[in-house]
Length: 90
Image: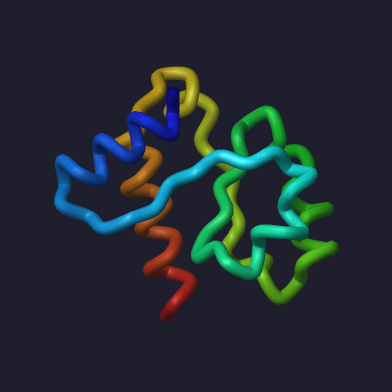
């Protein structure tokens, strides 16, 4: 549901993006292809472990705000992710 709302928000805002959901067990197989990794709030406790496992990708990982996730606010989550991506490229 959250992914669909993020896709809808990107279309509404005219932002080219690819949004997909994967289980954390697939991270090893997808991380090199992703511009950014958002973790659902229920996985936020694992972010430091993922950063240790993938130090070269640590700057492109963040957890979704629990309130935004609960509200399924795809536009806010998308905008937050874009801000983090822009910030990591500077």
